[in-house]
Length: 253
Image (cartoon, helix red, strand yellow):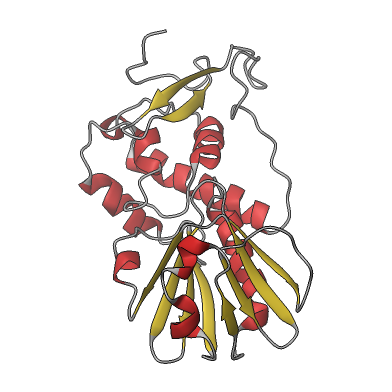
């Protein structure tokens, strides 16, 4: 699944169309039923921004198009008139470029962004609002596992499964520890690590996976065998080192 850093990169690429009146096509039948071409075609794209895992495209007249990429969605910016095969969900065509959305089933058009208001503070904001993030985490059920809470976009927007795993490994915090058992200092440091890692990727650094998808391999820090197990209501896979990320109620083997 594209995480917050990938969504921010997509929003930066889409900036090439900001300020232009765009032609709109919806080649995919499911996207065509939303009437986006009729409602947005010929309007000026005023701005593009990323909020958590969402791309918000604001058009003149107060219309806001929300794009969530789910598991496989991708935005691509190409020269105008570039040849392609397949059926993209959405094409926004400007003077010299066109933005193409592939496999992006979540497209919502509204005159405001009320759904976005339900999101927590964006981990990639500059500067990040760690006080607000900490406040939301502390307002949550404190018996909830910290790994599960970090994926809740209502609490902190933008962190996905890979960055959750790598952040907690670097912070030496087990994903299974209850929020109540993680101090404010450690929670704040964990959030700061997540911001540094994701901002670094946004700036071009290549991530080195220490635990993510390394189940059964040796931890690069302590040598213990890395484990994985589904976590939370959405059963996202948690990866952790039981040697240097101790604490919490571990799942049964």
